Length: 242
Image 1 (cartoon, rainbow, N blue to C red):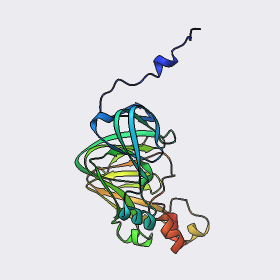
Image 2: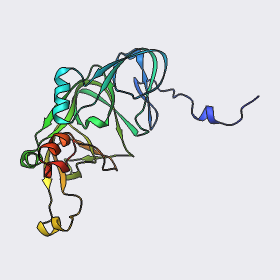
Image 3: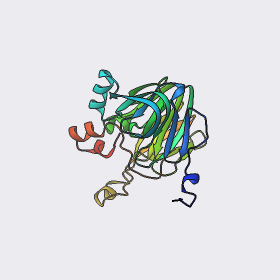
Image 4: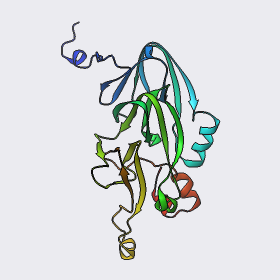
């Protein structure tokens, strides 16, 4: 029996050769011969060859404690071996960047994979007085040289914050680059606005400095510190989700 149609030709493997190559917008192809990678636990959808996986949990005792305290972080697995590894996360769109002795600050839920050569840790964000009111904010800092793949719900926009003051909903911000400063802006619209329900845009991130901020077209990124703040205060901090 012969199968007709272009299904297999249209969806054949990509011919790209970069260590991190997009199979399509929602699937990442990793060539394992370039060395081990760290991937989000459960993100493997397929592989060809001999690929082995080891659960790293929250990345060691220190990172595990930080994750429990802050609500930030991501459970990772080490992937090594030979062949090709395919990764995805809930059919979200994937963005690939290459760091060359550089650093980015990323929401933990948005991390899909990165080269094992990249150092990572959970860091408190210096967000000025607004951050203190919100109970503290935390992100995952990725630093060094290697590939990084992050996910966004929908196609994001990258803002050059040096061009103009930039503000974004805290639950839509995915990451920002080194050189970017961030503060929390609490926009109540006055007491009457709060009593009447407000605008729903009470807490915003204000960015400045030099670099880029990546914002996705969906307000569902959980920002670090939410679990801790909601349990302790139930107030303004509970509106932030890091």
